[in-house]
Image 1 (cartoon, one colour):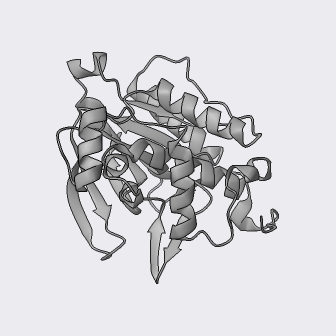
Image 2 (tube, rainbow, N blue to C red):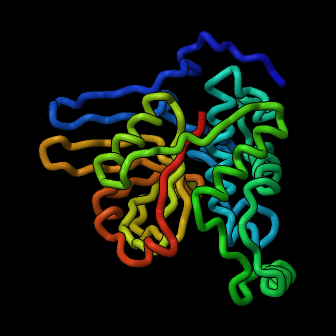
Length: 266
């Protein structure tokens, strides 16, 4: 593995808060403004993309493993005690290397695949039935990430919150993770919210609906006057923003069966 200069500003293990000209607006973010800069043939990606998986079933339900790969690679890049998590070049993260890494992580952070439909989908290269149910809970996600780290000789533990699941406590938890320079995984099941996504292939901003999907939180903007909280996330290889208020307020009875959740590791 290439040596890294851990004294470089790029690798300082402290998240940051920024106050805008309007003192009511505060942004908390990871130290790396580019998050996980992945390069390929002139294109620059903001983290990985589940569509890079080789098999259709993997790409269909692979948002969880992709979020895990994002988090693990970022921690390897920014903290020397976690460097062995990513065994490729951390100074120049290429798409080819990151795809290999995603495949390695998938073996541990593994979605629930539906045997018959997954086989048919992989054979046809398109969807047949429901080939994968993805990873539908925090516990399975956290256990897989911890097992992957252990396979690399690294002790990594999920930071579980003992607080009541309120909006304010969730915001505090995300802020805490980002201040520690730890990306935060976010799972949203059946709570559709609007999301503005920057397509890394075209650089165009696209409006879409976010649900049944894992993303990686890289920043948070709080308007302390209005109470509005905006999340900056990595998904499908690009940067996106969404309203955490809208996400939280959309939660309904489905949450009793398929709870949304947030988790980071240390």
